[in-house]
Figure (cartoon, rainbow, N blue to C red):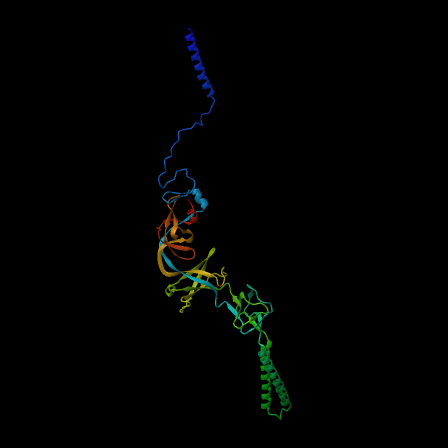
Length: 382
């Protein structure tokens, strides 16, 4: 009997313990229990998971750029059209003043600079043809100045004698032959002109006038400065009439030039070919181009790169220069759109067309879409 009671007590105790555990865990949240890890399957080569939202470089070297990222980068493209394009040649040149619309004021002799009626001209000041810019007062050494003064005094004395002689002859008119009176009159007039010429050469200033209308491009003098003969004092240019002089080291390159342009920061300078010389200068043939636009943002003496189109042709696709990117080893490449969100880097061979466009002569097929804006940003995607 006691053994049966003990077994019953043990059974009841075990049932109570089990019930207590069940009650203790009845209100707990088991949603955070760890679950078996799921191994993601690797994406196939050249593709991305459907949930990718950032630009990424694929294993094959191409780029995946979602539509939203494309709008943020401002990507634009053009459809390549392969055809015959005008071949170009490149020259080094500089801006010069039009010979028919510019001029220089040089000293004809040694002298001292004096201000003109309106003072000395300043850079950028507008002047008119024939306007007095300054005066050049001749400067001579003491010996030359003494000789001039002595000559002036001698001519002054001779003139006084000639005038008295003419006065006596005129008083004795009728007794003195008319021919003698005329000869005395001519002699007095000639001596008066000689004295005036010598007097002007002693200290009279020489006016320096503008040879053409325009603006002052260079002013190399100040008041009181002593200059030598042939020294350049002022330069006058017309900003609306400028030219570009280029050098061709191969005379054959100058044949068949039709049009030309020059790249400038933020724009292009259109040029018109005028002609070329037939005499080498520093082992090169000088070529002259006229600037088409008036008041172009260039200065005389500014170096430029001239790109001239010739009569020869080359087969390729015209692309903006902004579409080109540099890759390893200095090679040139472009980004080609291969699908809605995939871009492929393509190495190309290029030739200049003008200041803003190039010709892709290899590596591009007709109808392919080439990125023209934002190409440099695509190269930074990793």
